[in-house]
Image (cartoon, rainbow, N blue to C red; front, side):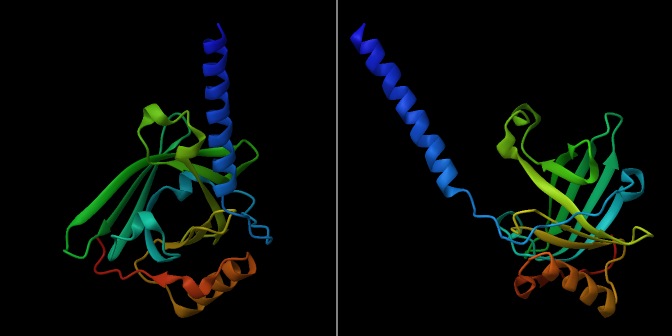
Length: 191
């Protein structure tokens, strides 16, 4: 019996250490609060979006250009997500995922998962996807995360004019994003 208690105590101690290390390694939040738009008509938001620019991130480091995101509304109110990019060798890479509303109060605050469906119960596989700016015609969208780690500028066309780009980068900077790190995405002919 004492050995069983000792084993249980050891297991609990290991779990506690794991939880503490996860909490300690969590990124510290920027003090600037990120604001999403009030509402997104998800039906109008679906379709093809070209990535115009982004903050560099680990899961897109292999993408050298022609980044396109396609969204399709499902019958269960979730959104199928397909991201495609061109690699340095010219080959295309794609990944499929699903998006859901983060809470019922806003269609502009979504969460996206690219992990297998059987892992969807884990909160760690869901990433924030907040629409920070969206023009009235649904032609440009600024998407980011509340922790300022991720930022994308998307458009319905492969290029946008300089004034629109500058306006959206100013919006991102006002929301606390480090726009000096943003890289433009090369887009060749529309696919």
